[in-house]
Amino acid sequence: MINTDLVIVGAGPVGLFAIFEAGLLKMRCHLVDYLPQVGGQLSEIYPKKPIYDIPGFPTILAQELIENLMKQAEPFKPGFTLGERIETLEKRGEGDFLLTTNMGTQIQAKVVVIAGGLGCFEPRKPEIAGLEKFENGKGVNYMILDPEKYRNKKMIIAGGGDSALDWAIFLSEVCSELTLVHRSESFRGAPDSVAKVMALSASGKIKLLLNTNILSVTGNDHLESVELINSKTQEKNTIVTDHLIPLFGLSPKLGPIENWGLNLDKNAIEVNTDDYSTNVPGIYAIGDINTYKNKLKLILCGFHEAALMSHSAYKYMNPGVKYTMKYTTVQGVHQF
Image (cartoon, rainbow, N blue to C red; front, side, top):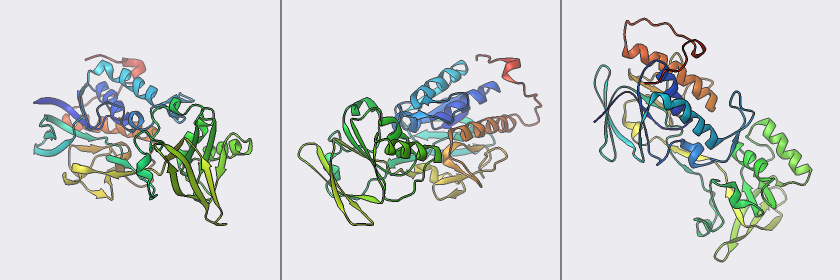
């Protein structure tokens, strides 16, 4: 039996930062994640992807951010159960939760913090006949783990969101030939990223095909070409390529969390923005897995939520105890 103050379900960037915020208040944390390593989506889907909106870092690679967060959490000696998923949660009394994983690991905690990102997720795949033939290293991938794999290769990226735009910008300096295909004339991504892509297209660094959909893929043992169609002119075009990366987002699934008695809105957990608590006392939800009015799914917003959650969790665990918040510049960071 593992005993802890806070059990954090999810070891992505927001869950890792919660260790630091809780540690400042001398609360111990144990993290559980279904993935075999910490980092969540950042490590699993785009470890080499640059992130531009972390305060103090004009640009930082996703995996580098995770490594920095682990260093920041290290003084507080968190525990980890990786490669396992919380299956059941039982509230046995005030400040007493028992969680059991799919592998039978039991964790007793005073507070439960759900920081599961999008929950259990899988990429959305386009409905293209024969696409699965080129999966598993044969030219079609739904995430980019190592950009160097595509150096001096011909690539097609399909999509119009932030991920497609960011990778198009980054890989324009890696691939020998890069085509960005989008079914519309407008993008869903950040305006600055859109402007950069348009500039790369104008300079000839990438080929941009708007109002375009994928019709078919062809090849023998490996992907060789992709047939496209312009939805306005109905003109068809075949492009020879080594790789196709459809980036149409992820399909989130809450999994067992759906059975924990929480108020849900579609695939997200409703929270009180005073402290990011749920309708169940002692259970909080931070990061992309929660929802509230004007919610922004940004890592930096999750960091803010982790800070407010930690102070509320302290009060929940220590009713009636008064404390004075001190800045880290005053008290420093004390190891456990």
